[in-house]
Length: 73
Image (cartoon, rainbow, N blue to C red; front, side):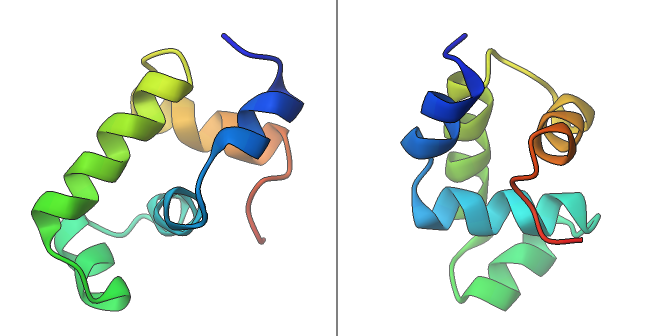
């Protein structure tokens, strides 16, 4: 996995938005509604996030985001 600074820099704005909403415990459908995209597109962003972050699951993504201060409290 990339070092956390490089990893954070490699996330797109949309991926950061999706990650923030994942940490708020929103479903893909809820995230899609907030961002004005489809649930399928949310799934695509989640897949890319997992790949960039070493194939972590949702809980792993949340832990990584919190540990590294990538999300708003």
